[in-house]
Every structure is written in C-alpha cells, then in structure tokens.
Image (cartoon, rainbow, N blue to C red):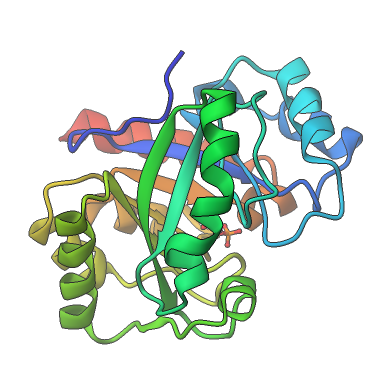
Length: 243
Ligand code: 1GP
C-alpha cells in the first residue's frame, strides 16, 4: 500500500473528502464516478468534525482500495483506519498551536496507531476571500502576489526538515495559488510540492501541474461535479505522456 510518499518526479492527483460534506449516498456517488480508481490518493479531513471520521473512513473503504491519507484540521482527526497522515505544520502562520501545540497532543496517539506520518510544511495563501483555515488557525495567509515571501517560507520549511510542502489556497478559494508562485517555489526546493484549493477547471489543473506541482488536491470541484474526476485524470495522463 502506498502511504503518500511523493517524489520530485510525481504528477499525482488526490481528491479531498470532508466528512462534514458527505453522507453515505454522496460517498457512493463519488466512488462510482468515472475515473475514480485512477486517482492516486484520497485525502480525508476538514476544518471541523460534525460527522464521525471513523464512519466516513469505513464507508470509503467499502467503495475503494485507494490509499486513504488523513488531512487533519485538528488533533481529533486521527484514526488507525487510514493508511497515513499528513502532519501539517502551518509554516505560513505564527500561531504556535499549529506549529507544535496540536502535534504534541497528537504524537502519543500517532505512535500508538503506528500510522505513517508525512511531515508537511503547510503554506496558506490569500486567494481572494478569507478561508476556514485562516479563521480556525487564527493566522495571516501569505499574500498571493509576493513570490519572494513564498520562496523564503518554503526554503525555511525545507531547512527545518519538512518532507513535503502544501501550497494551499483554502477550500473553495476564489482562485488557486498563482502559477508564478508554484513555479518559483518548486524551482527553489528539493522536496515534493502539493497544491490545492479553488481548482474548478481542467485548465487550472493543467497550469498547476505544468508549474511543477507534484500533487494536485481537489475537493469542492468534485463534490459538486463527480464527472470532473475523469477530466482531471485525463489531463494528468495527457501531461505525463507529453513530458
Ligand atoms: C483544501 O486544497 C483543498 O484543503 C481543496 O480545496 O475544496 O477548493 O478544491 P477545494
């Protein structure tokens, strides 16, 4: 089973399932959609947790053999029924809770679960409107027109020891992280870069992968339109063939 370890040569696609936005019927629809089995990873998590995480994981497991990676909004979103967890360090912010506090709470549970941990430098950008992450983390996002700040933050994350970076526009963002930021960050670092937030078209996906992203994450875009999955898979595969 793949545990989400990316390499610099990867061009992967992940879909994000927020347990609070899906019910059993929606999960069934999503995992019956054309192209779903060609997605690389399923990320599971969200800012809050009104619904039961374990139940959502069980429902997804019934539908697919794809690797399930936890994408936790807090230390409450841990389960040994996943295949790995992204341990997110919100390096764009200055809130110690999201740099070490939640991690201290989570660490003993993670050790007990024996869940593979993917330490991830999480960089939130201001892409048009305030997002849940910004509100919940009480941090300022990076401006989306200052690539030098993004590059410095990414380099610092790499030097601190993050194994991958996640450039995040925020779920439902008005627009994705800009191309020039992705290009400059991926040029500057030697660790894989994940990009997500605000992707609603294949053109946006193509731009993000071409700019150097090693994995694209799409949530809202497929929740509203499961047929978008097949379009994204086709776009990823066309780019891989042409390079
Ligand atoms: C959010 O990057 C993910 O953390 C996905 O965002 O829901 O806007 O696709 P969207």
